[in-house]
Figure 1 (cartoon, rainbow, N blue to C red):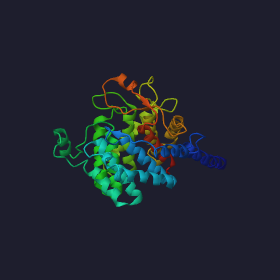
Figure 2: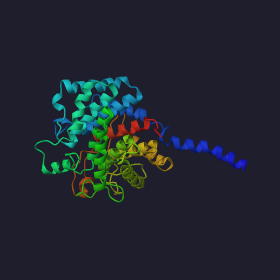
Figure 3: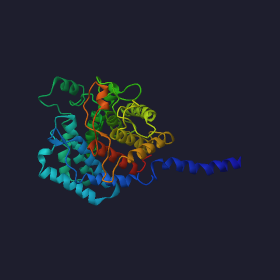
Figure 4: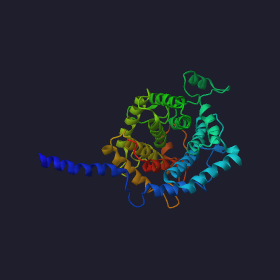
Length: 369
């Protein structure tokens, strides 16, 4: 009996160490800090990616924020200064590029200045960012009847039941919560998330692009995975909406584990084996799984290897200049399966650059379990 206990105790640290190293000790070419440095610094000289050719787009906003978070995590003062200087230029000499506040894909811009406020406590960032969160719930005078109906039910008037909304709404409301400590912002995002889960999640845990588009598009599902992840990181354990969101998250992660390809990637259409591997959606899924393992929502033994395999695969798509390849371009919904197969693939598109930064930062963060 004593011998058995000794052997058990001898084996336990090795087993524990093995689980802990799934998301650490990556080989040459896959070091998150080094890859993050290349991708983040690439943003400094990058051109603006504009929405409708007029305003800072959501992919640029998220790439920008990802670079800021990387600079904060790694203590890269040169990068942080460059990010603030670029933002200063935006507000001083390029104010026409600041998004207006009339659409879910534009209001999310507020998450960027609100993140800068969290790090610097510079009030001008708060003053710029907070109205983007507030106006997402303030019904405009010229609102459509559909918008009025959603607002009357307590949801954002910008609700439209497209799966990417669940990152756009979540991220700006969550940023407002973190900047102000006001629970109403977090409650708004949580209630909206429950609506989208109830309306859009399929029994297999995945999401159609929209109610009238029955295809499991990769990046569309990635927005949902990332949105749930962001909320779960912030929702108190006793929040009334947390169990429903956690259930939706776990159901999705189980399906993603099953759908991961032997390469470690996920396809442009997740459930279609003959479709091409797409990097932005795969990075979003990896981010959600990495976070789940580190936060303790997912079993380390079951999901640690999934996350590691995904990151090792993703790392191969980054070139020496920090440009990610095989990124699906911006994609509208369309009830046509071939449409998704035929979408162009770009290198360096900010949809993918941003999602990679999420993975990098999640890998560099410590566990909060």
